[in-house]
Image 1 (cartoon, helix red, strand yellow):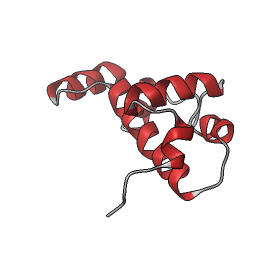
Image 2 (cartoon, helix red, strand yellow; image 1 turned 120 degrees about the vertical axis):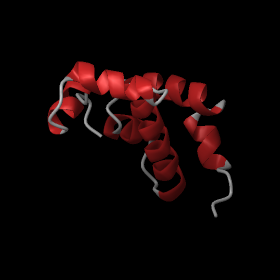
Image 3 (tube, one colour; image 1 turned 90 degrees about the vertical axis):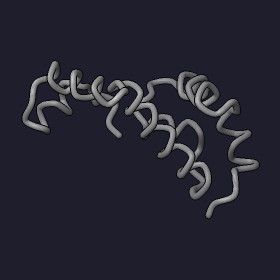
Length: 93
């Protein structure tokens, strides 16, 4: 995921305006930030469970300039740090 992914970039890729994208997301009870965070969390948990990439590398791949910012976000999403998650990920189906 690129660091510079913004709502305006996504709107342009969808051939719509940023405001229209925002309205459509609101109609569906979400925001661009929530969707971006959800995507980042899903990608992060997958990388933590299936690769040996460092937390710093994962944070960089997800567009964070600082690993500490990624760690804080991950803890907000899951209640655990990335290292704690990696040491005991939930069982996969």
